[in-house]
Amino acid sequence: MRSADVDRVRSLPLFRVMSDTAFRDVTGGAFLQKFPAGTTLLTEGDTVDFLYVLLDGSVELGASWNDKDTTLAVLRPVSTFILAAVVLDADALMSAQTIERSDILMLSGEALRRAMREDAAFSVAVAQELSGCYRGLVRAIKSQKLRGGLERLANYLITQKIRQGGADTFTLPHEKRLLASVLGMTPENLSRAFASIADYGVVINGPQVTIARPLVLERLAKPDPLIDNHTPPTDAPIGKAQRERWPTDRHQRTGS
Image (tube, rainbow, N blue to C red):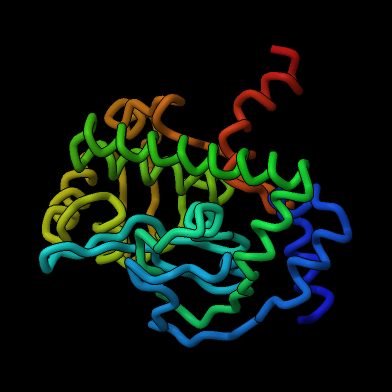
């Protein structure tokens, strides 16, 4: 593994607090592999031997039941996934597949569990990361159960605008089939929602979106900090725990 890749992993909040000894143990037997688009990394029910760290590319986390498929999340670098299964030494509850060519680091689950037993700071970091994942899941469930499809789309567009720097014109990060699944909609319902949202000042040109009347769209979306996480982009990688802490950290920095 290249030293630059080691540094990228070390910079993640999950690994930043580890002792040097524990970090060397965890990364000593790591595998860095390049996977083409469409590669299945993990299937529901598989034994989980590794924690995956996405360094480049993108990965879709999904699930299926009774001939139905759904997308649970789409990951971008730098991200870890399947952490809960690694901690519990349990089978995977979701599948993982690359969306595009991706560089993925695989860290031994056994070594990670050993590090948790021996390194208290790392154990706390794992607990915080899992707490961030849990809160993100609660947000997603609240959005699905409390909002209609048009409202979910409106809030998704507002979130993407913020995460991509705040400009009124930005690019959808996923193809619309994938976006429909992320939002819990059929492709047909998403198409109808895109047609309807034009009345609120949203212009769609292929993957490019322009929010021409932001206040009008916000009145439709009614964004709520107890549902939506509007963490702005940062230069340094942040974990799920840091995303959940952002509003609190911001208030502490500003003294409000």
